Length: 408
Figure 1 (tube, rainbow, N blue to C red):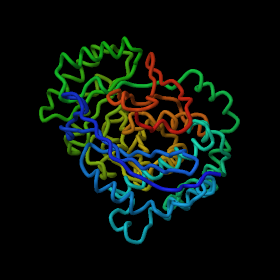
Figure 2 (cartoon, rainbow, N blue to C red):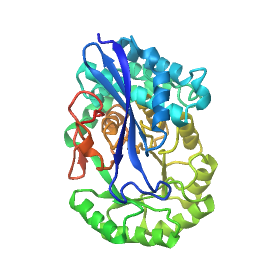
Figure 3 (cartoon, one colour):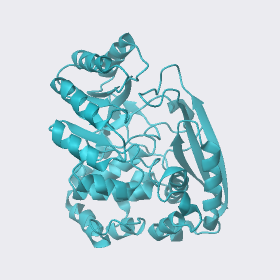
Figure 4 (cartoon, helix red, strand yellow):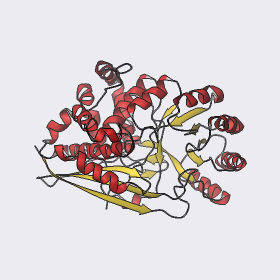
């Protein structure tokens, strides 16, 4: 079997068109990836990506190079057969752990490494990542996970049982492979877009088959946010699902006031309404604005924080992102936890949907998660060797081996 013979790293930076990617906090983004390449003697290379907005790239790259060396010489199948233990070993490095633990640039470095491991595993087996994952037994899946610090809610036995309970429904849920996975358009309403741009983008999204879309809010002028939210509702129609994303910009009192002012336009969710570490604040907000749902996860750094949000009933839509937590392994652990709590997983797509198009198929087929929809951001599609294909608002199932992470 292939072994990892050497490791290289890279930085990819992609400037955006004016206004693209802007929100209430991140006003000048440069979409970027720090890339881990796991080379084998058989010329197969695993590619792992982690997302930034253009800063800290060299520091994360340096951290990857410091963490990844123990993988040199590893047999791919042996590595992945016990990847949960390896993930824990890398995350608990006695020196680098001080820089986290399990958060910040050190965790982003781990995500790039982890995602490269899964990509390499799928490529050595000659299958897309979604196919690799759904063909694993429950025990094999759980062997790839680090469930430490989750044992009060999710033991190894619990995780295996959740997977086994869904085996009976897999044949029906596998129909999603042919149908494709629904998407939603997150690019209609970046915060720097004019009203006319937003209205035109809504029309384009509807014509392209999307029945769900997202508007950025959280500007210094609350009245602007409210006006634009109702504008999108009118343009999209009463049946459309319209999500609103504040990108953490509101204080708790302002989040309560503004969410209530937006209630009559029926937002499907309010995303990242306040400071992302404030579990109790989100719990309070959830009680105050129900039945409006709260979505979060873009800046929730690890499985333990997700556990706390779920325990506190402070989240309704789990937006875990494998390029923001510790990679595919931790994504699956959070998805299992969400399944126990009967919460939908709707990933944030720092990868532009490249890896997550695989992971939501696994979530639906192997975990029984509803196929709600997956965020779609088209800005970088031309840079990927196998870009995610979205037609009539539907992600087409990828067929190439790996996790769709290779660049042109």
